[in-house]
Length: 156
Image (cartoon, rainbow, N blue to C red; front, side, top):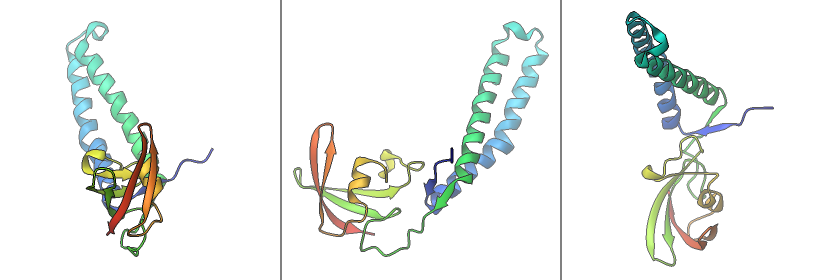
């Protein structure tokens, strides 16, 4: 089964590459040192420090594999495309027509999505609804709480 394409911005790609480099060069060495120290304490069958270090090592190795796979399947989007329609990489100001409040979101691939940073996935309900739309378009987004109506105020 082919791997799922991972859509990233240039910043997102850099962030994943830096994390991978850190895990491979620094974190691996730190954990190896912890394991070596824990082994020096003697009997590893009842050594919680050894168990903790081995568990962290397994987690780090799993994360490295995940990052390598994501980077292998990465497609970097060009956010310098025309800004008359919403695309991946677009920063969009939406007006909630019920609350009359504006919200700004950047549309990114699911690997980069971070609601705390106002980065929403192109696969999210709002992301799907606004892709390909233009300024002043009104979109309806179906969410568990009902239907939200947004007007696209600007695209950058």
